[in-house]
Amino acid sequence: MNIASSPLHLMNLLGSVANVKTFARSLTSSLMQEKTFCPQHYDVDPNTGCFPPEPLPQLPRPFSFWENALAEVQGVLYLGNDESDEALDKREAGENWRAQVRSWPVIETTVLHENIRYLQKAHMVLAFIMHFYVHSTPPTEDNSPIHIPRAICVPLVAVSQALGTAPVLTFADTVLWNWTVINPELPLSADNIRYVTLLSGTDAERAFYEVSGIVELKGVEMLQIIESFMLLPNTTDYASVAKISRDLSQLKKIVEELTDIFLSIRDAVDPKAFHWQCRPWWSGAPAPSSSQPEWIFEGVPKSATVDVSGPSAGQSTVMHALDVFLDIDHRLAQKRQPAPSESNKKADTGFMERMRRYMPRLHREYLARIGDVPQSVREVANATPTLREPYNAAVAALKRLRDVHIRIVTLYVVTMSHSAPPTDIKRKIQEEGIARGTGGNEASSLLKAGRDATTRAMLKD
Image (cartoon, rainbow, N blue to C red; front, side, top):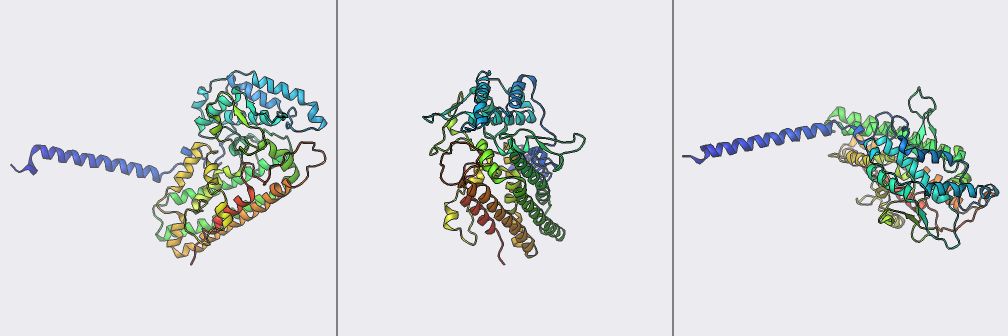
């Protein structure tokens, strides 16, 4: 008998064919799923981007005491080192509020995990409460640590783990989740948004959130361009190349509009109010070398290892998406020209990656997905001479935006850190050395390194 025609061989062969067909169907299904990429799977809305499409709901009744305490705090709490007459008059009321927080039960959050909007609302409320609690605590003579009550940090860590984000106030808490609409009959827009919770209670803080929100909403147009690139069946035929060229030109215009929005902050936000009244509330846990008191999360094992740097514009998923799409190499992993300067090399090349840990997990996965394409738009442009000019123009626009960002940070952070506080602010000021952003990182060299990394993405003839 010919072994090749034996019943056993035929059965094995048929089984192999069936396995191959099964694998092929599975692969085809997987590829189809990738081609029908759906941003909503990553909690990115087609119309509102990284904003939820509607304001976050109120928490269920067992958790309402969190929201009630947050609503009561405005006008009651002042910075702990504020020694103005008004702040001193409120010290007792502030301590009563903190004592109330310390008396809370540690409440189980499992029921919230079934609804992402409840999780987001719980994170926002608890993170704001924690910052109010920490920064309103008066400093002690021996600079002793601040113990954050377990009633705050245990549920905050639990909802943070469910969301895949840091147990501290983040960009998402202050800008993406902290709003309602002015007119409930109309959808969310730059003209129909009002920020709800303020730490400092100042117009400067509200205006800063508003400008940040306008940037995010304008950024939705960038996300639509990025997503359309991902869904192209190929990037080499005439129609696809023409579309990419048009989209890159439109992306340049959007980035230029973002630059104008960034510049508008100078008219909307007073630098002194921003620096002396807003920024202290946003600060996260201090670095080990800082003179500020340590934060201790009661009831949280290994709390010293959690990410608690505080909110930063560097946590904006929209701006990270633009960098991913244009293939900006912040880590200096690619050999590009001009070579990094010595100050670039000394800057924190892991900053952007670390900022992603302060985003919700789904947004990190979104960034990973838009970066997971066979060829980046930069590689496509490099291989297609007619695309080099529109690609370089988009990168140049982003470089100009980062130039503007440097000027703004110089005015609001670096210059103000060397200025005297306004005469109406009576506060013990502790010298902290170099000027740092709200995320705790040295501001000037970090931003210049990001600007120079953007320049190095330009394609050469």
